[in-house]
Length: 168
Image 1 (cartoon, one colour):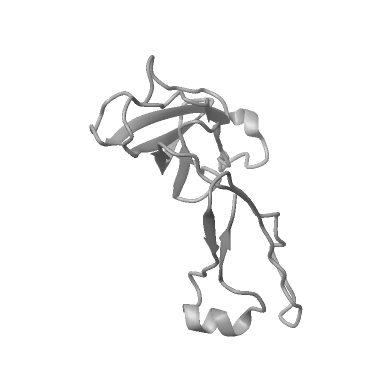
Image 2 (cartoon, one colour; image 1 turned 90 degrees about the vertical axis):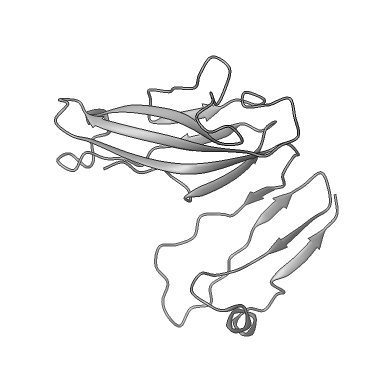
């Protein structure tokens, strides 16, 4: 089963190192990572569909793949959109599966957001504290949202503002 750690869409700036990690597993041997072969590939979506993602190509054959700083840098100030595809194949070649994510590469530097690992389960009566650290070189703003709650409902649940302006 092919899986890529992180969301379905990621954003980064061209001067950052971007890492992708496989969470894939062989359904017959779910705890043994060495039962899979990995192939990471990249396809440009915008502005020129199908054009090379990086000079000299971009293919990785391990459980992780990395875009080095400026590897996907282009000569203009456009945002570029890519599809990063992971194909895992069982060592015996009997099964293959793919997963993909979209990557938005921006020409300007983006803030770095660090959210510590949260527990998988909470007691319903416990207070949940979610914190984050934002590192930015320019002015920025942050906002919290939830796919499970409307903004008005979320505002009633939290003790801090859902948005905050940051200075560099």
